[in-house]
Length: 257
Ligand code: NAI
Image (cartoon, rainbow, N blue to C red; front, side, top):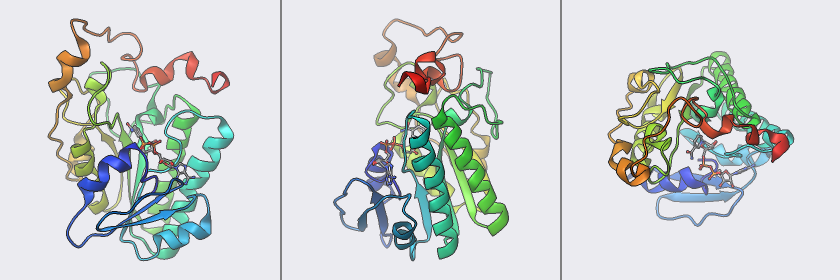
């Protein structure tokens, strides 16, 4: 697991623990390994470090990199080149299954429709979103050219609980995230699936997720009263009008960072 010290990695560690499974955790930030874990402090853009990190693993969950908008060079280095380094290390080591953390921001400028389908053509809302499109493209290449099983997760909002009105639609609960990762790790072929829970206000497809065996059980609606109070959101305006929410606003232009 790359980026294992981050928010999603921290939520997943206890949920992916299994008898007989060893989780090898990599991050720039040192991690204290628990039972059934190994920890490596390394930069995922370093080919030698990645070669050691993937030696002997059955599957890679690639979460590491910038998880919000950053200047172009940083996105290029960590997210785009970093994904190449991870996939190339996987290929050389003969790792068969790779799961890539993509994002809704790969298609962020897609306007709201009743149900946004799977495999939506790229419509990134930021350089960060562009890096997720590149990540999916690299995954596709390594599948077609080298036969690697690659599943890209267009994650919505993976946090302990939904934090705002948008997340009532886009929330991926930590337990559902673990279910999705288990399904993705086992999947053959190449897939792009939405990472979203069974939210009452969901507007992104679960068809391809279900096709690989992901059955979400959680619904953000349980938090609606707490999140909304008496205010129902205006779905025709940002952050609700487009897949990427606030990332579509002018203040997310990298020049304004
Ligand atoms: P995060 O920012 O909390 O964690 C990312 C981790 O990657 C950090 O621990 C960081 O130290 C590590 N990292 C960054 N550059 C690195 C490098 N060069 N070498 C090694 N490690 C490096 O992000 P979070 O929220 O855990 O997200 C995980 C993945 O899921 C990211 O790829 C993010 O883009 C994606 N995602 C997350 C969403 C969410 O709701 N949390 C939504 C959509 C996508």
